[in-house]
Length: 207
Image (tube, rainbow, N blue to C red; front, side):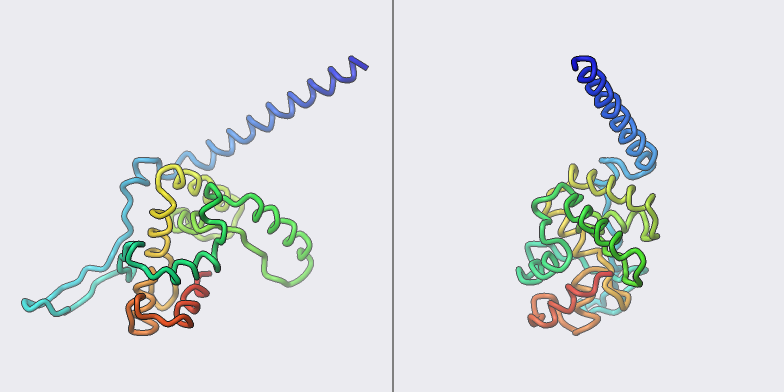
């Protein structure tokens, strides 16, 4: 009996070492060329260049990605709540990756494997922000890199900073990057002027 217990203990130990080594290899292999802490801390998404006349009137806007930065503190509470409800209702609880949601998505996708249903995703807001850096190509490699970068972001930025960067950079269609740009393009309004229905529409646009 003691020999059996000793064998099992040894096997469990070896499996744990192998698993840990495998995890370290994955982190190194897929994360070695991702932005480091210093690069993340100094990163600023591009915003529009605006040219004004002498009296202050807007003359022209230039941008590859049409984006207008708005601090989180200046955003309506219901806009923030709408995006959290639609995209990541456990945002303030998880460390960048919601393991429970990932496992749930895996089970659901396996059950729907032979059907024609679209795969279910489980990306958090932090992961969606990371996707703007690693790209959006559907692959296991990209998802791993996205998860690694999301964890790094959570170590560098506060939740409020991550939320602000996300809401100011998320692509919402019609050449709109960020909620303010989308509000102007779709409704000719600032985000503070949006109705509840218009706010809900914006929250449903991320893909």
